[in-house]
Image 1: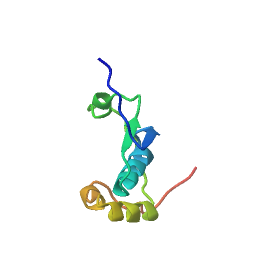
Image 2: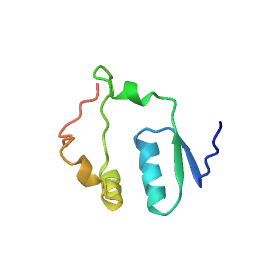
Image 3: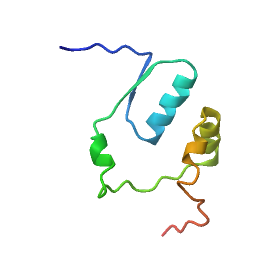
Image 4: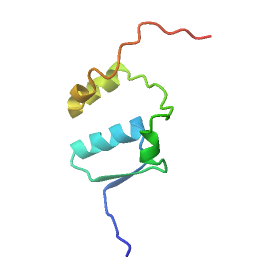
Length: 85
């Protein structure tokens, strides 16, 4: 049986930007669906190379407004220096 899902917004991509956008839109009362081809089980596997992400101060302020900054606190560290070569 197929099921029809209805929402105000469909976001393609469940990375950092897609998920942040979904939270912001939901915060404003919109229903949101995210579609992403990545296998969620594979992305949390011990050998997964998730790389690092830098979160800019403006993005962090948005996370504070959305109420998620506290959940992320302690899972990262400030970037004190960057070497580009």
